Length: 376
Image (tube, helix red, strand yellow):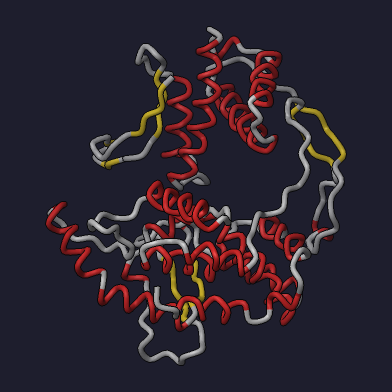
C-alpha cells in the first residue's frame, strides 16, 4: 500500500488542488473507494479544510487498507470481526488506545460515507447506547444528552489524558539548547503565544507587528491572517506577543533575515515572505523543525515537541488568567488564543493547571523574557 499526494499540476475546473491524498496498492492500482472519500474530505467537506486534517484521515485509511492488503481482504467484504482483529493487532504493537480509537473512528466514517454513496450495503460496525460519567464542567447546565451516547462497540475504553506540558524551567532549559538563534525565537513564540507548529513554521513577515509606537512592557496584538499564515480551519485569530519578544523578532527580521532571503532568491529565483528561514535560505519545514526539537531534547535531557510548548502556554496562561478573572473568563481567553473550535477542548487545561503551584505562575512571562534577552 502506498500513500501519495497531488501536486500543483492537479486541477479541477482550472483550479490547482495540491496536497490531496490518494492511495494505491502494491501493484500501483488506485483504491477507488478510499480515494473518493479522501477527495470528499479535502475538497467537498466544509469542516475539514486544513491540509493537516487531510493527512490525518489519509494516514488512518492507509493503515487500515495496509491491513486489508496484508490479509487479502476486500474492503466491502469486511465484517466486524475483521476490524476487531485489526484493532487487536494495533494493541499488540503497543499503540496508544486513543490512537487506535481515532483510526477506528476514521474507518467507521469512511464506511458510513460509502453507505450513503451506495458503494456498500452495510457498515462493519455496530453501536450501542451507553451511560458515561461526565465531569461537572461549567457548561453542564446546557448538556441535554443525559450522559447517554452512541458508542462504537469496537472502541477501546480510555482514561482522559491531560495535556503534556513542561514547567517553565524545563522549557527554558530545552530552548537554550536549540540553535540557531532564530529557532530559539520561534520556540519562544510558541511558548508565549501558543502557536501551532504549522503556524510558527510558515509565519509570514507581514503579520509580524512592529514594536514602534507601542508601549514597552505591554504585549502587542498579532493577527494570524489565514490568507498569509496557515491556521487550522483557515480561521483568523489573534495572539498577544510580549513587547520584548516582538523587538527581538523584528531585530532578526531586519538584521539576519535579509541575507537568508538573498540566498533564497538566488537558489529558487523568487522572493519569500516567510519569517523563519534555514541557514541556506530555504523556508523552514515541519520536518526540519521536528528534527531540531529532537536534537535539542537529547542534548538538554528535556523531551519536548512543538505541541508540548503549545500545551505549556495553554496550562500556564489558563492559571494566570483564572487568578485574575475567574475560570470561565480564562477558558474563553485561552480558547480564543489557541484557536480551539470548542471550549470543551480547552477544558483539559483546568485539570492540567491543578498540577501547578500558583506561585510558579506569577511572573512566568517575565522569567521567559529574561532568557530571551540573554545573548546566545
